[in-house]
Image (tube, rainbow, N blue to C red):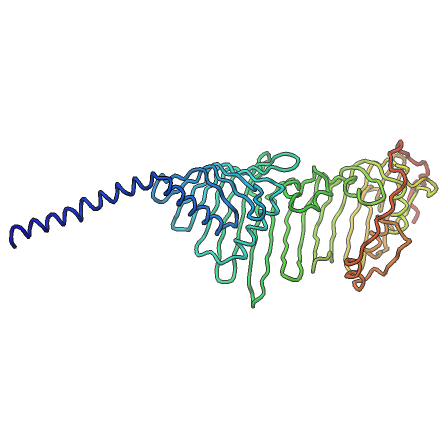
Length: 434
């Protein structure tokens, strides 16, 4: 080979193997330091977060400690419909592993009043969206939930999203700060397609300790009627499709505020109760079977509720009916078991082990006794709570849709609900008549 040819080849090799890579690297370093690169990278990550979660993200800073790790700092997540702030995260770390994508969130803070909206967005995008191509895992050492009444902190939070041919499943495990939990609480959501029909199931386990209902009261408003200090321990299962839903509940509600529970009704009942549910079954959105017990130690009850319960529920009463409806009577214990199914409602008094059938004990003796054998229609419970009889309709499934469509009257409240001095009747008959 001619000497000039060798020189040309050496120069070309030097340019291709040395100058070009070095120049490209320098150009890449300069480009990475420009605002254009930062803007493009932020656009990429905000678009990726939106495609994955359905949330609008604002990222303060992006860093790359290693080639396989990316850190997003000062992240804000907002609702795409209206722009309301849902959560803030100090640092979000993404890493790709052999088991899929792992995301570590440092000190996320979630607004509880946006929890329902957040769940809806994630449900629509993660469970009802395209099937994930690989496993996704979200880990956080501490998550703060800002509620209406304060803040709750969950630790060791782990969310795992997996999928197969016909199913997408998300499992969330967590410990609640301030509670001695030997096992984590768990929420499992499953979206499944079978023969062209889609359904979603929810499973909740509290991890062996009572958890505050206020954590999800903004998401499930019905829990507010149990009071702000109510806790639940047990399991919940719900399965829903496009037509209706089924469900099962087993466990204990502790710290139930009876005054808050009966507040919508024209009666007065105070005290703190424990409600134990051995089983509760819902089918097509309706309660079909339930069994359990309620126990409250002390409070007051209105004469109107005593009279209505005795008449509608066929209970024995040792209180005269000549007292005013808003008269308040003190009681020492309210305890009864219940069983409800398509046959009707059965109540059994549990106040006194020595005397069977006592539901309510006043300061001077027994106030209410069960009927021992009578099974009453379950609709009688509604008559006891809302004894407004000027408007009567058949309590059948045939009238259900009509009643849902028509405007309904508001129950007539007593003219005065101010608390009088608790009144303890002396009409105690002693032993129960058999």
